[in-house]
Every structure is written in structure tokens, then in C-alpha cells.
Amino acid sequence: MVLGISTKADEPDKELHQKCLYPTVRVENEGSGGTGVIVRSEKIGDKEYRNVVITCAHVIHPFSRYKVRIPNYEDWSTFVQFEDHWCRVYVKNDDIDLAILLFTTTHPLPVADYGFRDSLYIGSDVFHVGCGLGPEPRLDYGKITSLGGKIEGCSCKGYRTSMHMVPGDSGGPVYHKNRLVGFSQAIRVLVFRGFPVPITQISFIIPVDRLKTWDGKENNTLAFVYTTRLVLPELPFEILRMEEYQIDNLPKVGE
Image 1 (cartoon, rainbow, N blue to C red):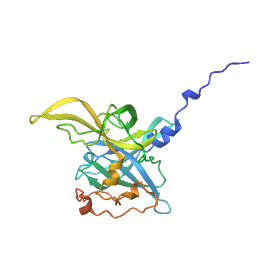
Image 2 (cartoon, one colour):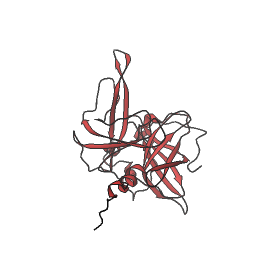
Image 3 (cartoon, rainbow, N blue to C red):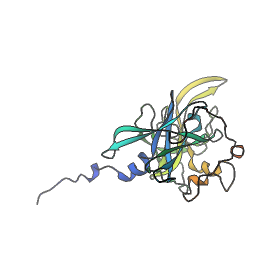
Image 4 (cartoon, one colour):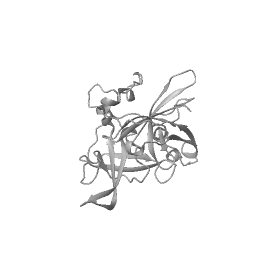
């Protein structure tokens, strides 16, 4: 009998790639950027798909044009190039530091699976995908270290984690068992007696459940994000307390 060495352990984790890596995008303007995740891709015409991206609100600045950069891969995980699309800032809520972007493609895109029913505890294993300090998305693993999430001098209101985050990771998806449970939010400065004091990186996640309480109502107007049968609504800015601004040179969706 000839003994052979199995290569199964060296094969890519296809579920992780399809559900976690592929829906991750880079959100970028002329001077800065962050990370986002595609949560919905729906057909709206014979040859057009509308895609919904969630990122952090602090990544989005007024009077800037933004594009979504979709990484393309070969052999499952080898980065090849970006597919760029201009996007529109649909809504932006600074209270919970989340924003929604829209862009169109001629083909459907991979989307993340929500983990609204997944419970997180201190010690829960999580990982995030981010585009910080380089365009190519990468994975970092860690654990939930605190559910309090409020630290003096920080604006974060999420969960603290031991995951390593760097500039540009903000808005990236955070997963537990390959299900989307939150969004990366990194803070690197505390205020001590009125002066900014550099400290060790503090990593937070914004729980995905914040989407359900976006406008403080049980029947959320953003239910379309996690209920695929619902139609994308015209969001009332005054109810959602959005930061409303007009950008004259913002390209239309699909341009």
C-alpha cells in the first residue's frame, strides 16, 4: 500500500472566503479611506444590481466623492486587482457611527450573513476583515474582552476586543462563526485633562444590532438591510437625525 499525504488541510476555507472575505470592500475618497461590507445585492433592472454597503460614519466626510473598491481574487485568496465603482452616501448617522452607501453593478455580489441571533460574551472568538495600512483586505483574530465599551475620553459605545486594528480598518466587518456580528471601530487617542495623549491601540466593535435601533423604533425603517424581501425605502432624514448635506458633484449611482 502506498501512503500519501492528504492536502485537505492546505485547501482554502471556501466558506470563510465567500461569506467573510469577498463581501469586504475598501471605501475611499481622494485623501483617505476605510473599510466596508456588502450586506445586500438586489436586481433592479434587466442588467443592473443595486448593492448596499455598511461602513462607519466617521469614515465619510462631507463634500467628498467616494468609491467602493471590490477586491478580485484568484485561487480563492490571491489578490489580483480592484474593481472600482462610484457610490452614493445614502444615510449617515453619527450617533451610532454607521453609514450606508449604494452603488450599482452589472452582476450580483457576495454578501455577508447577519448574526443578529448570535450572542457575544466576554471571551467569544471573533475576527475582522480590514483594509488598513494597505489596500488588500486581511484577517485578524481576537476575543471579546469587555461588553461595557465606554472609556473616558473615547467616543466608542461598542464592545472592546483584543483584535489588532489599524487606521483604515474602521467600518470593516466583524464575524463570529462566519456570521456578521459587528463593525470595526478603532480609537487611538484618549483625552487627559484636555490634552490628546497617544496610547496603545484600543479596538472596538459596533454590534450589528445597532442597525435595528437606528431610529429608536422597533419597526425600523432600515429593516430592508436585514430583510431581503423588503424594498429599499426613501429614508426620512428628520426622523433618523442624519447629517444631511448636498454634494453637487457627487456622481449618480452607477456612474
